[in-house]
Image 1: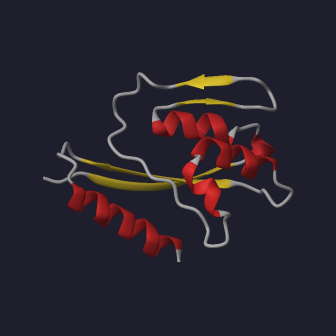
Image 2 (image 1 turned 90 degrees about the vertical axis):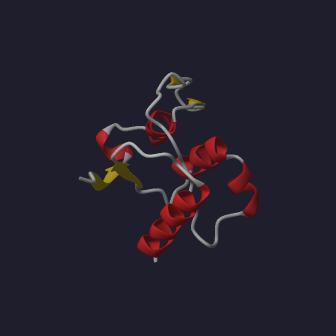
Length: 112
């Protein structure tokens, strides 16, 4: 039997949450919050199999190459309100290029 779930959560500063810490956790990465100096370490998280970062169409091209910097700039923006965290889980499976493309297509359709 296949197990699947898809969740959308909102991360926002108004509730004391940090998008940088949330992004580091979800991506199993290390990121530093320049405003607070806090460093979030989540490199030992083994559950992360695949991650991707989606940007709106009018985002500057250089932001696509530096996800951590992109998140910091976005969080400091006067237009910043929140970030959406989209999470999916499947029963244990081997990630292939075809499955990555399928997941990106699901996110692209959901975004529009």
